[in-house]
Image (cartoon, rainbow, N blue to C red; front, side, top):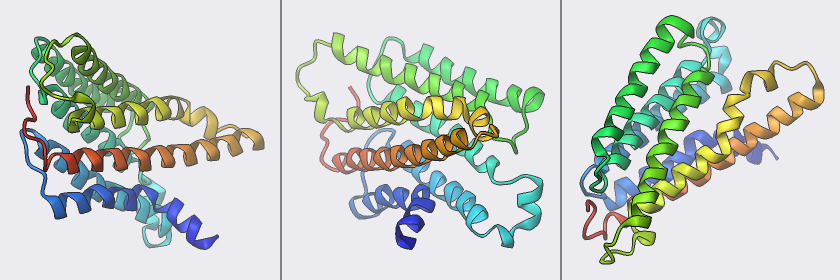
Amino acid sequence: MRIFQFLIDWSEVWALLIPLIVILVYKPKGPFVNWLIGYIILSFILNTAATLMVEYNNLFPIAMSNMGNNIFYNLHSFFMVVFLGWYIVNTRESRYKNILKMLILGYILFVIVNFILWESVFRLSTNHFTAGSIVLLILCFTYFLQLLVSDDNKINWIRHPSFIICVGVCLYLAITFFIFLFFYPLFNNKSESVRSFAQLMMKVYQAAFIVFCILISIGLYKYKKAKETVL
């Protein structure tokens, strides 16, 4: 049981080791793949810092009492949207590319304004998570829509790295969107049953993140064999 609990507590760290190992062993290459690699590396650093502060809070008493580890989760969410969003927009040609790039820029501006005027960067921001999820879902749905209307039959997109990565992003967001949207109502509720449900939802989030990392790893692995990555 201790080992199982250890794996759960550190799931947001060791899950990222899967794509990191793929990156180190297979060295995936292709246009805009560096955005994926950059996201994985930054996420590993941020999630490690966040988990260390929780698991060894006695070593960071001042930091945990003054700000906690929420800043790392806010940064992780920001980098996920910007890095993965930029990758999705540029992974294939689209007539809407400039509009989608403006959407990412609008998200960046919203984050700046949100943390200056409304919320503290040291508090888990539901506004930030919600806006980021919506932006990434729009980018993924646009990607899938383009595949449906495309008349290019030269590539099996179902097996293409970018398709697998977009599926991973959509699946992760579909599961976690409402978890973070109702994060504070769940965890601040005094009812024991509601708090137990909140703990269960966090385990669901951790499982979703593991699946997300596995799908990202599969996409990165396929990049070593992909002949064309931008169409």
